[in-house]
Length: 206
Image (cartoon, rainbow, N blue to C red; front, side, top):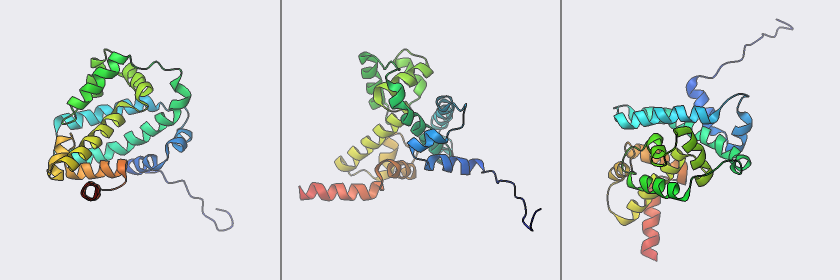
């Protein structure tokens, strides 16, 4: 101890805090934040497998588990997306028939679980090769694309039906209304209820 000052050891963040820190970092900044030797693609694949298992088993605590995993997936996808422009020319994307079959598969399975491994099998590629090729073709990783399509389907159902949000969430492959609200706010910036009210008012005024 010098001059009456105590020496403090740096406090380590808890796993939950680490997830929040990664989720809060913008994609470009996240790419610079990643420690040397960290493979975002490998870690993303691991977390996607966890998410797929949670969705497939429909566990009682699935929403809470998804809340723990999704922020880390979003952060890792941001890291990969930030690095994409520099890598895109080096990556071979999906062939037209693969793009068509995968896109069709996604649309046909928005109501339930959709594993990246199943999408890869449809394209006749290994999981890792598929993820790289898909990202090069669609400009985002498979999970991010699927989430975007689920949200688009939810928006369509909100303006074309009178179904309650809880039912729409299930129809779009989401765990419950709370899950829909969280993902919707992340993507759209507002709640499903508020968006639906605004969209309905616009339709009436048109």
